[in-house]
Image (cartoon, rainbow, N blue to C red; front, top):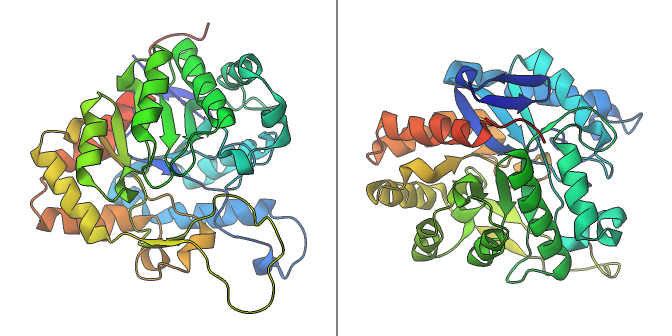
Amino acid sequence: MPSVYTVLGPIDAATLRGVLPHEHLLSLTPGRWMKGGQGDLIQQQIDLAVTALSGLAEQGINTIVDLSPYGVVGRNDDGSNVSLLQEISRRSELHIVAGSAIYLEAMSPRWTLEADLAAVTSRFINDAAGIGPGTVAAGVFGEQATSLDKITPHEEKCLRAAARAAKATGRALFTHTTHGTMALEQVAIVRQEHLDLSRVVIGHMDTHHDLNYVRAVLDTGVNIAFDTIGKVVWDFFLGPPKTPRIDGPFIKNAYHQSDLQRARWLVQLVADGFQDRILLSQDLTGSEVYLNPDTHGYSGYSYLGGRFTTLLYGLGVEYRQLKQMMHENPMKLLSISTDLP
């Protein structure tokens, strides 16, 4: 039987039920404020995640995929703190799958910038046995990122490396698009690396402004993720500020995408017959929850399986179609039937 490589080891894929395939469990707090500014964040990160996950079992969700790249959204630069996910898994009694990836160039650790394609590929392949210096195996590669309206040479290098590692290890590849841009270009790069497109998930397609573009991405044969459900308003950062801010007003980049729009798009894509290649998740992070008090701020991880599911049912999506998007599709992608080389 195919296996799913969790942070506690391989399990039978048949044990999976509902899956949230794009989350970041170690980034639920933006700092030490809940500890009075004292000590490190380790136990706080674990405790917050365990508590936040506590409502999922009753919704039939038993698996979380942590797609945190090196150096961002809770993952440290060398990946060593991925081991914290093991305690979260034990205490929450949920399966957790860890991804491995390198994020946007402006936020990439120095070692990734200095490594060539062969070195990054080797690192990813080794991560399938143990991420960074540890023994927690990567069950997928992702979220492998590209920038807004461009793919830098560094980002192309890392995407090619992740595609090669996915092909070599049988893992699926999950990407990050910035507001859905460069999705077709991502597909073209992955196709050049001869990775089976059915093992590729193009991420954040629910943040693009054009449904016809989303359809064009699906027409290539890849899977897509509507994986920011509940993130109705967010600030987006393309890199650290280049100069210190001066006192007074300043302009920032922000974005709005209603969940009603997401739901209506899903209804249309299901009607088009694409429900077998769509995944759903929330991409919930503590630094953005305050911008969404009525969705993530109110329901947390339970929002998708609760209020958003109710919205989909009200618009005509059937239970079997939702089950395919939340269970069968991610299970297929997380399943690995080949042994490590």
